[in-house]
Length: 347
Image (cartoon, rainbow, N blue to C red; front, side, top):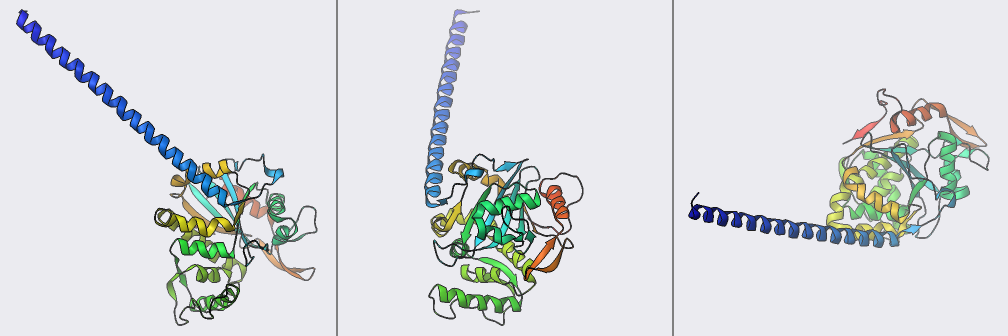
């Protein structure tokens, strides 16, 4: 090998070595920038979660404090619709929807619990389900569900009428299919809402000749949910789930464009026993969970109850074993049998 060739090879090797060193430095700089961005995003996320949580009303339940919010891969949270008309006022559990998030089936189960079910209430005489909340608040209501349905629910979120209406407005309203009779009842319930909110009579009334797909604002959607005169309480709970499903579907885009109003409309009227760390954990799961299908149902299942009058109350006498079986098979996936035909899946 000539000296000239050797020198050329040495210079070539030196250049390659410099390029490798420069490339290595560039990768280190890039990695540092990525880590710095990750730290910034994590810090911003942590700050946001803390700020949001501080606006909520936290209610500690000591008997459930050490209980996990997840059981057998399913996170159960009871949504309680409080029928109080004013901020800070207590009321009855007018709506109860069990939200079960299953990572195994990649589904969110929304199960309405009819308030007129005649149940055993720990420490009290048997009564309607919503009496449990009146006797002992959310804690007793959660205990009552476990005693009667063998389902462990340790976390709840409670909102009142005002928060519900404002939340619907914050996501831009909802599109729902209404019959002409439902339109008329929306106006009937709006009469009370307008009076309580000191709004002019006739505000937000719908054209009573309408039917079909209609866009409802917050007060209109609330009035639609409260209707119990068409289709009994089963239809009323179905209407509640339809509105809630529409809110869930629209929430991700609304958070990008209208996060401030969404938070302001909801948080001050929301009470929960979810801890700050649990809320943070749920927020991290949100991008994945919003892709899950929503499965709607109600308990008691059709054919598993009968109407009765007990102590001068109109109640539903329930076949608890049949409903326990439904919960185990559908929400927890205990068997590989076909999903109940009573479910309605919303993609």
